[in-house]
Length: 251
Image (cartoon, rainbow, N blue to C red; front, side, top):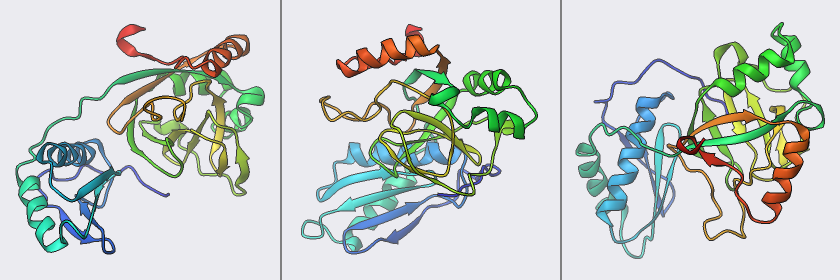
């Protein structure tokens, strides 16, 4: 996915309603990506959940739109879209209040084999890259690509880095990476063209939990550097079922 961090959208811009096959409607709020637009997406998502529209089976927030999946045997698009338009008109400008997670990361070495390359490209030391990356507060804009994969905005501009010319066929689960103007936490092992800065023992997707998804759109994330020995200890706790991430207010 290729995105750009744009100028702010006008909050009053009316959304577009775009049919997506026979069982979904895309509510599109703009053509750019920023926090105000994301707030509108999340506010609309909340209004739909509160409305309890019969036939709506799932909603999927993205950077700039909301996918509304429905059962065509229960409701038709011509019935659903006016309901959505009414909700959008009254969704307001609510600011998303998500959880704020602190996620431990072991940077560099075998856990982040691109750290030194990224530092060299930006004429920095690896320690400077770690400091910049871990001091930022990231917003979770959307979950996608693989189950639990978190797309994060808020990467310091000085660390914006084009993706690899040759993607890797597989990177480990827990990889903490940057690509273009975005950051991410890999929930499962997957191919990737992003640059690996480190790895977290936190399992952002775990089918052994009642709720497999640890983080959600609207949450905030800050990364906390840990040494290799601490990473290994936390990984053992994660294997035993401990989340090993914590809320900022608990830090």
